[in-house]
Length: 149
Image (cartoon, rainbow, N blue to C red; front, side, top):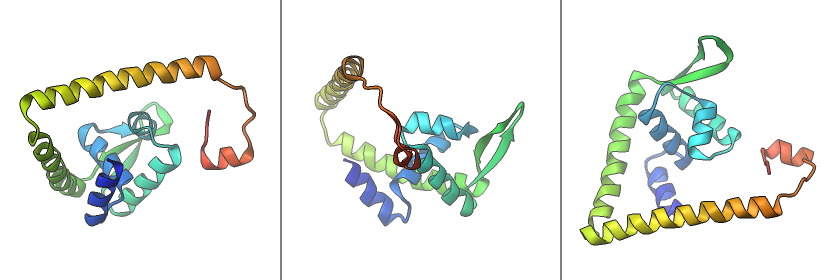
């Protein structure tokens, strides 16, 4: 499914990761880089790259958070609200059209199965972490690429 979003993003001259960052900003702003990282599951470097691109295009501004000089809050600019609104409306409409090709019962079963799979995967991952966690030293290469265990 990632390739479907990647193809759509490329046709619309935006990287898929930047598209998803823009979507999250459109849902909730102001927000912080760490909040985007947590919500999207991307690395700090990926979020930073997307934000730099959006900032260079004049689509976001970053402002220091009151009471926390290290943290910057990210806001969409008026220009980006118009751009993101139109772009994301098209994407969400395409998603909705695809979902509507399923009958009501099929949609319910897909959602139920997705929730069940998500819960099972979370439980399986937690179990794997609990039984197989390894205390490994972090190499300088891991630090450079942002890899963490």
